[in-house]
Picture (spheres, helix red, strand yellow):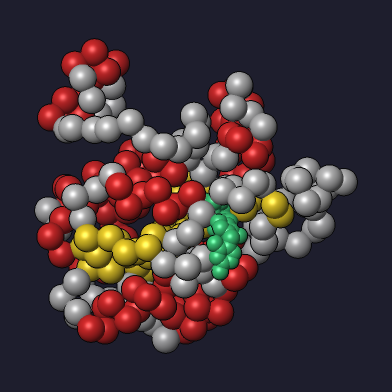
Length: 243
Ligand SMILES: Cc1ncc(C[n+]2csc(CCOP(=O)(O)OP(=O)(O)O)c2C)c(N)n1
Ligand SMILES: [Mg+2]
């Protein structure tokens, strides 16, 4: 980030010291905001050398290229058991699975539920953008009732999965929370608390992050619309907080 950027970045003056590179996400995408919060939390805790970051297929896979961390990329929905294996083989490693809502709640839902039930010592971050983003905006388990997406042109049905509530239901002692990319400082604090819980080896850590997909929400030309949908529609259906 150059000095000109830093001048405008009053919330993050420390950015002056940080090298960055252009990212490959769409304009207005929430993934970089979630990754930024995670990156700052990792830096603040000084744990870079201990972290292994697993990224799923979907837009989350682009995350492999932005951190000075060991990363591994696996098939859609399989990042959670891969990180469970990594943790069992390397108990000292801090193991984070970074997954989309399609990966976590559809094709990988069995992995998520079993890891949560067994209270595996891993941290899972699920990016909830209410669609299968990378493959073109198909309906996901998180798509809200009436939401128009490519595979539901008349509006999605009334069922939508509430990940944190589900994990809390099957694991009463896990760290379970939901954040949102539009509240960056809050999200960074949440990531830090989640990482601390994980560093203490206290069991399963689950953080869902509400995150915009401007391409498939068709709001790329209008940040106000993006923000409104994120804060006024998504965050109403999916309450942000600790569970
Ligand atoms: C086993 C397998 N099934 C299906 C796919 C095709 N696929 C690639 S990305 C993707 C959608 C990802 O959606 P999500 O997990 O919500 O992540 P997002 O792109 O929205 O961040 C799918 C279905 C795949 N790569 N591997
Ligand atoms: Mg998605």
